[in-house]
Image 1: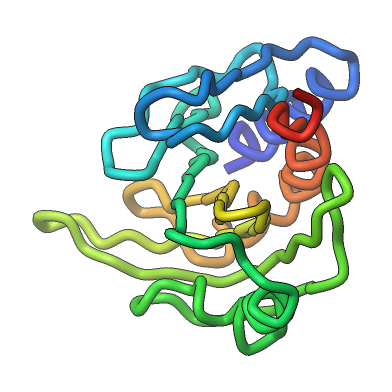
Image 2 (image 1 turned 180 degrees about the vertical axis):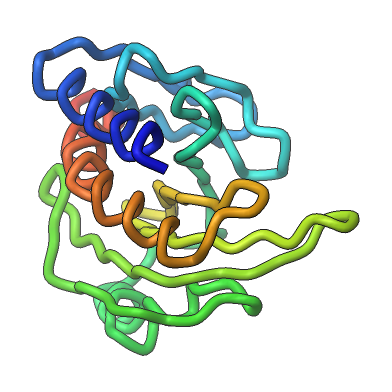
Length: 190
């Protein structure tokens, strides 16, 4: 698994060297009026999200890591008490999928002056005969009537141990914060 850890380090080096590409949502379609952009390493692929609410799937070479940008829009602007609840430890735990296990969270972060949260978790699943295991970090932002998440997943390859997945997750995790920190909510500046 040395090659995989090397790929993680290359992604971090690329980003730190400014070798990045920017993803822009244009407010159309799945973005439901939200205009945001973020940077990702130039060796990664950008794929249109296949599921509802998924704007883009950013994929590291070899599919070792991927990042999903998802947007949901509410009927009303979120109130301060609602935001406080959603970004509390209990609220962030609600973002862990049913087949996931909570690891940790942080409700004391901001992006573009907006309160945000982070929840880390593991997840198991099955598709056909393939059993998946992943370590994930989901950054959650609440802006007006939008909740958007940038979720990073480090998923096992066939035959890969959970400890190997954890090592890859730990190696790439600094990049997650850097990519999240590159987000600009264009609606704020219009």
